[in-house]
Amino acid sequence: MDAQVLSELHWIRVSLVVIAASLVVLSLVGMSVLMGIAQLSKHLGSRISFADQAKLMLDRDEPKKVIEACEARLVEHPADAEAWWYLAQAAYRDLQLKRALQALEKVRDIRPDWTTIEQLAKVIEEQLAQQVPEPALHVVPPPMVLNVKPASPYAPKDASGGTSADGELTPLPPG
Image (tube, rainbow, N blue to C red; front, side, top):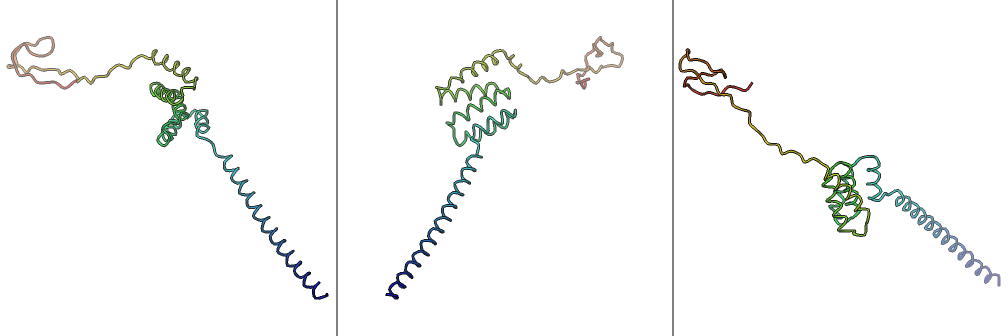
């Protein structure tokens, strides 16, 4: 009986060591998983959405940066209504009124349920109506001043400094 009891005690001891080792391994795996979840939630919590980034840039009065960010976003996601919305707002703040109105029309196409579009569109349309159209600039060459060389040094002079006699016409330099 002593040998049988010792044999059973030996197996109980081996079983307890295996159970303890398993608990240690499970504890380490559990802690690793929890730490991974904590890191992931930290990472996800620190990530700012595109809309939040655009809003922050607008709050810092950086409309040109918002326009660049929206254009980059729209290359990958052309149906992103928020990107079009922030593009419209940034273009409006950068006084690119026609561009802002075009972006609002894209928002209207994508999300007709957004009612705030109409308010901003109305403001922009009113401002466009009040703008004085830019004059068309044409390049006009400077006037040519003609000098008439007299046929004779004794020819009478007229009021413009040229001669009334027939002679060769040559342009004078301006000024």
